[in-house]
Length: 387
Image 1 (cartoon, rainbow, N blue to C red):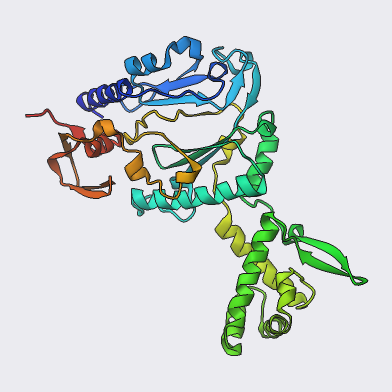
Image 2 (cartoon, one colour):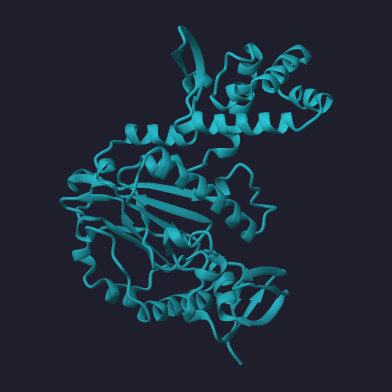
């Protein structure tokens, strides 16, 4: 990034901060603060080990400093401004989750557009929230668009505050279905003098697999026998004999499926459950970034600040507004809307922002400022002096 572009971005970031007021996190004076300034060259410098006292008035600090990136700690400390972690006196930490589109297994960053990456990441966020709210029962959640390629979730329930890294890793392993075995989803119950093995249907991964089993059985019942047999044999470990047994059991005793009874269809049903469990694990996990969640001293982006790699706002999202939230519209700062600037790029760029698509040709272009800010922050364009 050349000097003119860097200084332009820093200046406009400062203008943004002069037009807004930031809301600090709870217990802001107990947290460590850090930021990355607009340093020359390709290297970045993290300035950290600062307390809110060191920063002074938050709005004034951001107006004067206009950092490229800004962070606060998930942890609370007795001495957050201490120069070493050992001297900070760790007290507690929020449970933080990070979803980054670059890490999603279904995304090729070289092929997917920015809009496609964010849409896929939002779907992963919705799965994560299902785990946090329904499986764990967490209530104090803050959802944040990171301003870059994904989302953050801050859990501030009292029960998580003092969890160590190992306990947080167990939560990660559950959400990502690490080492999840079908046997873990089955319980033995007594009924009418006999014992039966049934899926756990009252929540968690067992309920997810059971839902998949019920849907699959309903689909089979709507098919003729030939198509249903063919469908069953597409699954690993199910040949013609087992397929006949399973299909017969589903047709004769649909109630057994709804109850999660694994005995009615013989060993074939267990093979079917194994196959469906593998599908559910692949489709319903949320690929969270493990080091972020397990690190009890992590720095995370401050909502309301600007992301120095996109020019977009790190945006809090009300859970009731999540369905309608579009980061390519809602995270574009109003401060950068309403004027044109001139930028130059070496190759054609496509930018999708504010419900519009902009084709920026090689050479000099007059573009809406929010488009230019986006390209310059990504180091895909440079600022040209205005005529």
